[in-house]
Structures are given as C-alpha cells and as structure tokens.
Amino acid sequence: MDFLRNIRYRLEYVAVLLPYRAIRLMPYGTVRIFARFCGAALNAVPSIRRLVRSNIHAAMPELPPVEVRRIARESLFHLMFNLLEFVWLDGNPERIRRCYYLPPEITEQLRGHVARKERIIFVNPHLGSWEASGVMAPFYAGVRMVAIAKPVRNPYLNNLLNHGNREKVAGLEIIFAEGAIRAAIKALRSGRGVGTLIDQNTKVRHGGTFVNFFGLPVASSTAPALLKSYCDTQGIPAVIIYGTSVRHADGRITAHAATLSKPFSEYRDEKEVLQELMEISEKFIRAYPEQYLWFYKRFQNIPPDCPPEVRARFPYYATVTNAHFFSKLDAGK
Image (tube, rainbow, N blue to C red):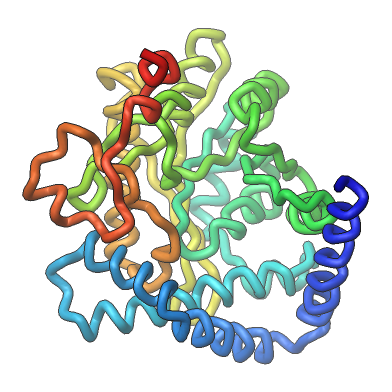
C-alpha cells in the first residue's frame, strides 16, 4: 500500500507541477484572465455555489439575493486570482514590488518593533491575500517570522507549495498546524514573530472558544492571546498586530494594520482579546466582502446553548457540537 500511495503522490505532484510552472511563465494579464475563468468554473459547481452563497447570507442576511450572487462570484474570482498571483510571484523581488504594497507608515511601525526587539504576533483573516501578509513584513520591513500553515498530505506537493514557494522570501519560515504552539513559542524565544490565521474552526479542546462573528457564535483559536500571555510571563517583549492585505482599485494588494484598543493586561481573558480581533476582522470584511473566503464552512459549529432564533441563521451544513468538541474526557463519560 505504501508503494502504491507513493506512486499516486508522485503522479499528483507531476499533475500539479506542469500548470504550476506554466503559471510562472504567463504574462501577468493572462494570470488575471485565467483566474477569472477558474473562478467562473468554481461558481458553476452547484455545491460550491450553494456553500458560498449560504455563508454570505448567514453573515449578512440583510443583503438582497442579487448582491449575494455578485459577492459570491467575485469572491471565487479573488480567491483564484490571489492564489495564482502568489504562484506567479515565485519570490521574485521585482514582481513582489509590482503586486504587493506595504504603506510607509506600516513599514515604519514594523521596523520600529524590530529595532526594539519586540516579537510581533500577527493576526490575519482569510481576507484578500493572506499569503501576501506573510510576504510583506519580511520583504519590506525585515521582520523575521514563522507562519502557521496546514500541511498538504502529499509530501511532494507539501514541499513544493510550502517550502518551495512560501519560504522563498528571506526571513519567512513555515511551521505546521500539528505542534504549532510549541513551534511558535520556540520562534518567539529565538526573536522571531509569528503569523496566525484568526478565522479557522478550532475545537474548544484544542484551544478554541466561541466568539461573536457577524452576530453568530463561531469557534476560533485563542492562540494569539495565549502566545502574548506566554511572552508577558517570560519577560519577552511582544505585541499583537492585526493585519490584512486586500486588493485596491489600482490592482495591487495593499496591507492594512490595526492594534488592540487598550493594553493587553487590561483584558479580562483571552476570549475578550479574541472578540475584539474578530470585530476588527468583521469591519474589514464588510468593507471588502467580495474578497473574503466564503468558500469555507466557517459557521459549522453551533454551541448547544445557542438560542433558537440565532440557530435558525446558521447555514445548512451547520451542526450542534457534542461533548467531544469540548473535551476528550467529557466524550468518554
């Protein structure tokens, strides 16, 4: 079985490698056109179309159907364009400068943290190009950091996509979700920053908690606050920065940044910190709804104590969480 699996992995690698290399040879305008075609192809798949539209309606039920359809269509285009564009960049400095823009005020802010030897805990949503957010801080501001990513099961593709592409920018290292907190702590202790994605479904037993997102309770990771708490207890200077990178009218991906409204020590707990970060995220998503990743089952976990009127807003795929979601111990009772 291992032999057959290895053969399959190699065939998958070759199948991906050919178009992957072809994208890097395309003119930039062709990449955009190809992304439009791929986005339209995704939108033509009934199951994908239903998922994306259901998520948008759950988050913003006040929108008319025609606007939901427009946002859904554009969201799939931006998803493909950002991914294909990232492949096209190939770590090339000239191409990065052409496509990614870090405003001077953010550049200076980040350089200041670096000069003061402060570790930066980046919090990033699946909005615009989250790949760009991991590139710009090291490329423009000299931030040494690690970014947490989900590994690809195929080891050849994992090496191509994660190590062979993402790590081409000096100062950026990819670490994987399994054992991520341990690796993130090691990075912080060594003087590097950490990039985390805020809007992934995280079980409570894995460090998640329910917070309000578009008026719905969603399970999200408390990792940014936990890492900041660790740094504070260890005397390691650190700061949480919310960052997102969206495409502006000029066609370039432009970075935005925000910080917490008060000192970290004034928050009651990790959940309160996470809630504020989610509110910042919602603000940016409402400003750029067509660039959010609606192609994801973000609202799949319904807490058991959710009121009926709120439960009715969840998408078709959502289910009420069981004891195993909260604790392995509880599940065994």
